[in-house]
Image (cartoon, rainbow, N blue to C red; front, side, top):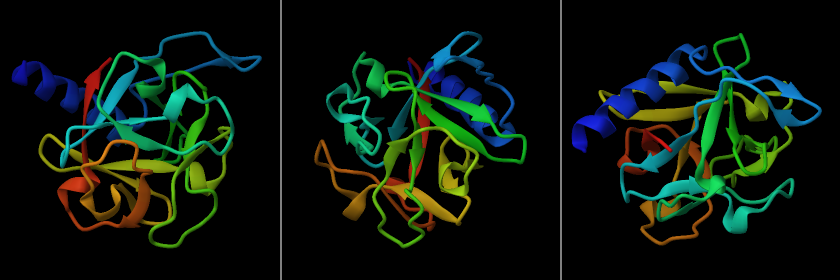
Length: 171
């Protein structure tokens, strides 16, 4: 199992770092081809990124929750061709955003995928885990390194803390 997780982590880290390994084509708002979906799992507490209740609403929070087989726990990357990518939710088909708030502690939500900087992310590899960094230089983290389910994820200055580190597993 550990070997599988390591392999899956390396695969997503490679996809995130190169922003080309996963391709998505949208037609009339629906996915049509070649998408690999991942669980993004926090290194600090083992919870997955999710959208509470499977919401498809724009502005719904990105939170942490015990990993499960729900589509709102599944994420893909889509290259923007500029070294960055979108992180798209399988259930809502919306992308992770900082809602144009560059402040430390700004909550993350899902928004329509557009070519705007609040939705641009890249990955920084840390030997089997990675930080997910916004175009503003802030990392996705868990406020106060909380171990509570349902906590909304935030952006915070990168610092190598475990609550800023993620690994992936194919869902």
